Length: 202
Image 1 (cartoon, rainbow, N blue to C red):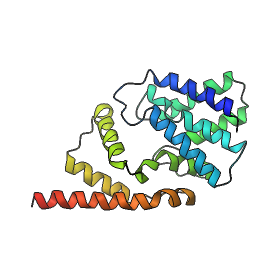
Image 2 (image 1 turned 180 degrees about the vertical axis):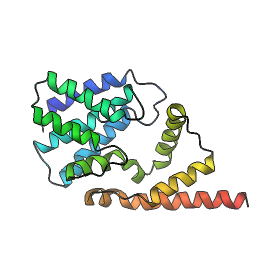
Image 3 (image 1 turned 45 degrees about the vertical axis):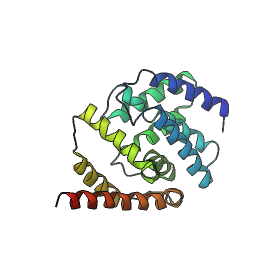
């Protein structure tokens, strides 16, 4: 793993995100750094090393840069940002193509076809297995209101989140090992909040 390379890429992406709309309370540079870190850890647990891990981490850094141009369909713009940087820095055509495919695999409804795609996909959604899940979820709720015009009442949001988590599962064994326990706890806490709401409004 080329630490100098990833430092430069990290600085480049950080500079890009300085122009990000401040209403991005979830898909911001902090989220990107988290995805990079989780991607690295999951890759190591799956014994993915150089050069495969390089493409994974580059894709993790660039995967949400497309939000600078659009909310929905941002992945295509993220690929453009990555390609522009990699071409200037003399990456091979095969490497650029691989990074682009990995970024596209982060689309919500994409069926991942290889381990690397599954790793990045799991890293991108790993917040569901964090103790601060409810904070992240609320930040996402604010984004949807700001950019998609989708508004949820508190109870509607609870039901939305429980339906999502009940049907969710990580795609790699490594992610399941690391995040599943807290994911189950978050589902339990959501059910308790829904129960409290229903009891108060019965």
